[in-house]
Length: 400
Image 1 (cartoon, one colour):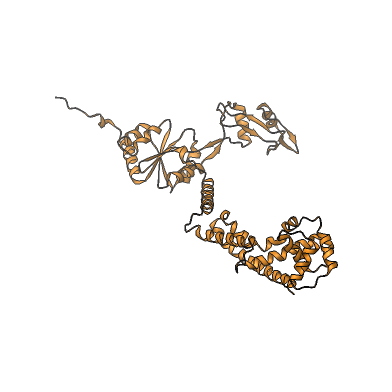
Image 2 (spheres, one colour):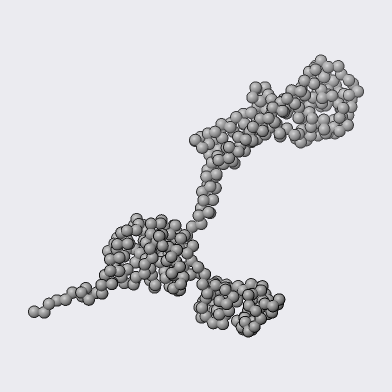
């Protein structure tokens, strides 16, 4: 009776070893990728291997051996969908995103061969070359590159697109591009897919702009903070700004409504002083006018009364001050035709209101700007104290 011989007996040992190596490396590394190898010159491939050493293990196997090694592995089997043409395995401890970024950095530029299809527009720029005068000038002309002699060197006369995307590169043009050290091809390992913890990531999914991603996160954080402030949503990140804004709003309300409250009286006094100065500056011919007359005009205006000799005199008398009829007439004459509200709107009161305005703007400032705002607050406090002193001094003139 003849003995049955199993077909595996005839499998070369090196194939068995390759299959076993694939399985061992797949168990050793948490991330396994499939990369395309087509068209990579030996020199560039050697350089890539050197760059990846210590970071990733690059192994090339026959496609049928790859299939044999992983077809029964539930996690890795989906990678079979990405095995085509010349394929290699890459094993690494890097996460899939860092792996793709590493492979992209390892890519190099290479010359294009005659008869190849150009992957992009190939532009030859105007300017001098390193060639001495000789046959090279005529060869460049034959390849469609305008060349001449200038300054003892061969020069490119004008910038030209030697070949457009999708066009076939002639042998002569390919030779001239190489001699000009124009390398239009980008050669490297193209990551088709990666498996990590049973999840399959396609290569294009892993292509992210890290700087843009970080910028988007920062923008989203800022927008979320602004929204929380605007809808008055209290949390650990917003409560300080919300309290500052509430204090600012209440202080502004007290100032605008002229509520004599201790936290607002200093600003109210400063505002009165600055408004009177603004009106005084508007009435150029009244430079020598005592401030009590200016205050009287403001009081009459704010009370909704006309600035007349009768009203101004009544206010000054009520303050216990002797009325100078000449000055009253001069004041009323100067005020006639003047838009007092417009004059007051141009007041320099903004400097006294800095603390309130600064807090009101807080929703548009990121939380991390707090330290810088604290420094500004010190200067603002000094300005506020100065404004208060000026305001008190001005009112002192009214009451003698």
